[in-house]
Structure formats: structure tokens, C-alpha cells
Amino acid sequence: MGQKFICMDIGGSKILGAVVDENNEILHRVKKKTKAELGTEAVDSRIKEVIEELIAESKIDREDIRAIGAGAPGVIDTDKGTVLYAPNIQWKDHPLGRIIEEAYKVPFVVGNDVNVGVLGEWKYGAARGYSHALGIFVGTGIGGGIIIDNKLFTGSKFTGAEVGHMTLNTEGPLCNCGQRGCLEAYASKIAITREIKAGLHMGVESSLAEAVENKEVIKSGALKKAINEGDKLALSALDRAVYYLAAGAGNLINIFNPEVLVLGGGVMEALEEDIIPLFNKYITRFAWPTMLSQVKIKPSELKDDAIIYGARALINERLGF
Ligand SMILES: [Zn+2]
Image (tube, rainbow, N blue to C red; front, side, top):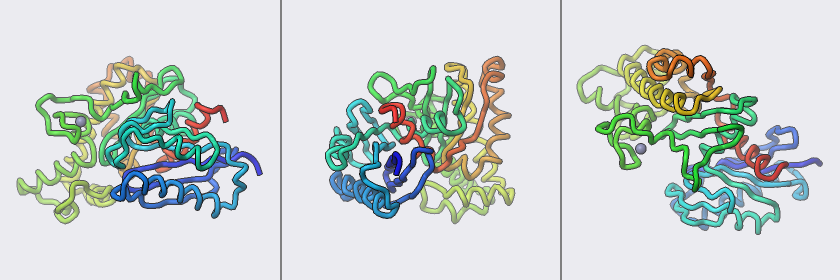
């Protein structure tokens, strides 16, 4: 009984799905590997399997499903429900909206995962009640989202708000996007891992040698453990990353003059207590004092569920449910 929504977080490695009720409570969750290497159609089938399992296991009535919403990586035309480009899942001009709507006969809305995550924080999480909000999510890479005057800003063709790829140093380290010196190349988990490896190479003593050996990305838990133990290399790598994170955030604060900045993502979730004090110290170096006095800096409230709730928020924004 009552309205139900299926909300999804479609990622390059896993697909999370949840049944959300009319009170925005999550009733049931399903998680499956994406298996992107099997190709486009296989991924479409996996998405449908997640939806089918959600319906079967939560025992909801199909008739009660009002809409399906999702966040997915890449460039997404939210008006058409088409994934224009998502290299992680090998999608190109992929009509995901049409496929899901034909299968389930309910409206489907989809947006860029990180943008959708910020929308979730704005509607249901740390940024709720504010008209001007920024979100920066630090994980393997860095993504973000911008709410201007109660509206998600996506640029003219859904590719805007790539906050992780602002250039902080034109001669800086190479970024995965091909440019140099992006925020992501300094403050992401990839960047932190690279810094730890460089330190080890220089002979700095650290307990992290094994944790980074043959890995592009260190596990957040291993980093947290080393920091708790006072590992000097881990502390200095984090310090450097947060310094640059503050530089990037300072640029955004000075441009957008937001009321709230939400810091989220896997690294934040694991290391919030270590990052927030450093961030608060360094941000004064980059944000103008007047702007800084007007912005609240808050950790994500929705954590791992930011994109699930963001999909719920997108359904609400787009369809009014
Ligand atoms: Zn970049």
C-alpha cells in the first residue's frame, strides 16, 4: 500500500538499488556487481535484475511503484534519460530511460551520479533548507555538484560542475582526465596513494608499504589505521591532500558564495575527524573572510546513501512525486 519508488546508484563496479516509501524510508536494498566488462546489454539486464529482486524481496505491489530514479556515472541528458557518455560502463548515446520505461511502464529519471548525490544532500541531508549549496565528494576521484538558487546547476549540456578538474597548478601532476594539476590530481585517493608511494620510494618509514604495493588506490580503512597510529607518511599525505582540497573549495566558495559546503565521499566518510580540522585550518588561506563567514562547512549526512536519496530527490524534482 502507498506510493513506492525504486532508487538506484548505478556505478562502474556495483549497482545499488532501494525501495523507498512515501515517507522516504528505505524499505529494502539490493546490491549486485555491474559487470561492465560484459557490455551494454548485460548491464541493462543487471539493472532490471536489481529492480526485479527489489520488488520480489520487499513484497511490494508493482502497482504501487510510481517512478524509478537513478544516478549513473558520465554525461547524462536528464531531459531525455539518455546516457550520452559513460566510459566506465561502455555506454554511448544509450537510451536507458526508454529501456526502463518500456520494461516497467513507469517514469524513469536519471542524472549524473555525483550531481544527483549533491541533490540528495540538498533535499534530504546536510544541505537541506539552504538555497545555495556546494558539494565536493572525495573518493577514488573527485566530483561535486552546485545548487544555485534552489536549482541543480548542470551547465548547458549536462557536463558542468566538474569541480574535480579545476586546474590548481598548470605544471602539476598528471590527472586521469589528461590535464595537469587538477584538484583530483592532488586531493583524491589516487593522489594520496601516489604521494605515499613517492614517500616510500624516497625512503620514508611507514607502515603502509604493503597497503599500496601494486595498487593504484589505497583502501580508506588502511589509511585510517595508519593515521590513527600516527604514521608520519600517512599524516603528511593527508595533510597535503586536504590543503589542496581547501584550495579548490576556496575557489568555489569565492565564485559561488554558497550558504553551505558539504564534504562527502569515501575518504571523508573514513577520515572525517581527521579531515575537518585540517580543512578548517587551510580554508582560511583560500576563501575570502567575508565569504567564509557566510558558509557552513558540513560533512555529508547521507554517506553511502547520498545517490539513492539523490535519485529520490530527482524523481521529486522532475516528476513532482
Ligand atoms: Zn583532471
